[in-house]
Image 1: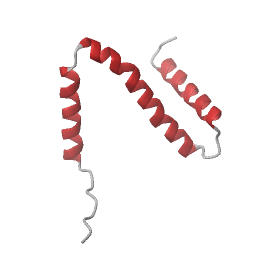
Image 2 (image 1 turned 45 degrees about the vertical axis):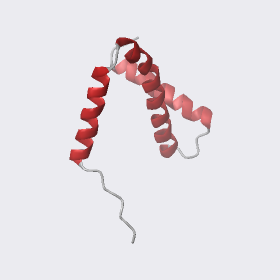
Image 3 (image 1 turned 90 degrees about the horizontal axis):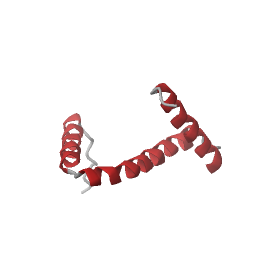
Image 4 (image 1 turned 90 degrees about the vertical axis):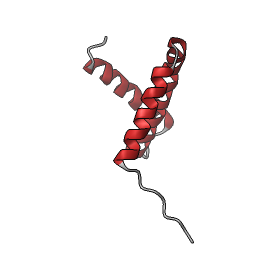
Length: 81
């Protein structure tokens, strides 16, 4: 007997988000400081996966260039130099 995979629900997503928020609130300032670069690296990996999906013929250097362009665009849109 095969059990079908569970589909994520909005309720499950909300519960996971609440747990993440509570965990973040429980972190010390030092832990939060260390988590920043880790979160940025994770976000970059996710973004690069999306870029590879969008541009399947792009080599690794081009993927990194596109990521840098997008990070710079984000800074411009946020009003950072």
